[in-house]
Length: 128
Image 1 (cartoon, rainbow, N blue to C red):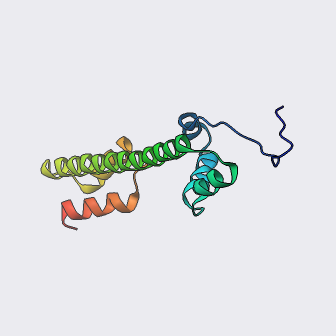
Image 2 (image 1 turned 60 degrees about the horizontal axis):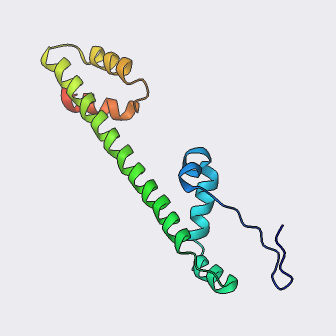
């Protein structure tokens, strides 16, 4: 272990952000909080340690962008699913099928759907 008699004890942990995001959500959230919610933490570390953490800034920025992109992708996927559900319900309505049959079919295809959202789509399409 490297020792410097003029330095405080410091432990350095190398983190591959791309792996951290996938494997340890809690650690990723803590790292995000450290770098983004602790005011000027990178600047403080750079000043105190006499180092430049440009790579750390870039890595955290990439992680933040990844989180934003992931949220956007999830939102788009949810919107696409809701559009598909709406189209299914409209098809059942056009076929003059009872709304309970439409609801049963949607629940079979999308078992994790939010029931309130499904009910609101059915009420809208069937005019209930």
